[in-house]
Length: 112
Length: 111
Figure 1 (tube, rainbow over the protein chains, first blue to last red):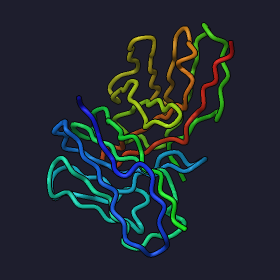
Figure 2 (cartoon, each protein chain N blue to C red):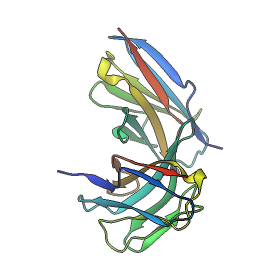
Figure 3 (cartoon, rainbow over the protein chains, first blue to last red):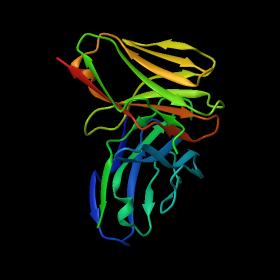
Figure 4 (cartoon, one colour):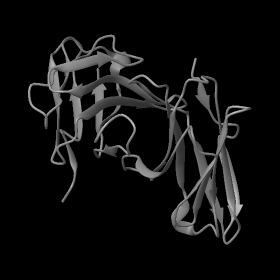
């Protein structure tokens, strides 16, 4: 089954404690993205990757890092989480930038 | 601020009627537009897309219209059903690699 898998689904952490949210896709897609979703603000792109070892900033990259060492995986790293990073996060993948994106189920992160 | 937005945050439609969800964009360089549906507790799901060299595209019960003159995008859902209740997002790709989403419209189906 074609899917994008994120882990964990829920996470509560404390300010400053490094965390990683994993994302994996099994569709051999080149383009992968991370988004955060906040009430009233819709989805905002954090980082995206056009292919292995190619990543770039989206609209809200501050406080986040990503890596793309393999085509299927695109982890989101929060080196020092802060409460304003409390949000619902989605990973997505698509064949390229002009094709439909498949989204994961989301990771609800709470930073206290 | 967001360059892709929606005129109405909530739309209530009688079951069986047609729904029209609107979206405005500001970047004339955008070359690809997508509509997504998000049900409660789930990730967004692709509905339909359209490229800037087209004015209209039809899918199953859905039609997307693109008016480049006024930078307007709309999603039409025919014979709206209870299962259509969701938040709908438009998104644009500006000819670069970023994708910008609108803030979403909640579609509420009245029995």
